[in-house]
Image 1: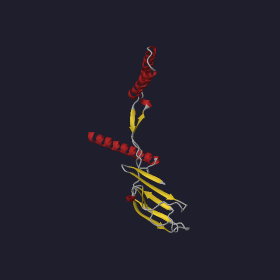
Image 2: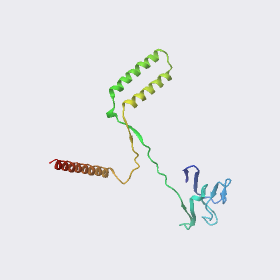
Image 3: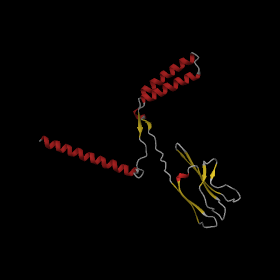
Image 4: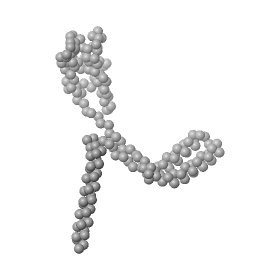
Length: 190
């Protein structure tokens, strides 16, 4: 299993289980002091079959060999790791129900007329495509409103049912506050 951490310094750990004791992996440091073997004790009789190789030895708190069920010992490694959380970036959502469809139709008609003129004047296909693409994107951006969606990295324990109940609670609260305000203003007028 090879894991890497995509930070400024690439950190890699290789954990291997070999069944052939004749392969000599060596001990200590590999490849110009960059990769270090963390297992110091044999894992099967006098052979080291299980390996942990890393270029970031500070991430290992301890590496131990513990007795296994068969004649092969088990490696136990305790690591300092930080779980990475993928955060969702805010994204644009088009609101098609609020689009100005009449303006879009007019813009598309004018785009069609202009491309037809360009075709009669023997413009190259790339120029016509660039014109069409730019004008269409401009029309979409001006006539279809957009909103920015929040990331969904909120509280994962709040399900859709709980959100519905929260909205219901808030609606009743607002209604009650409005009733109190209306009754107090009615009482102060009298």
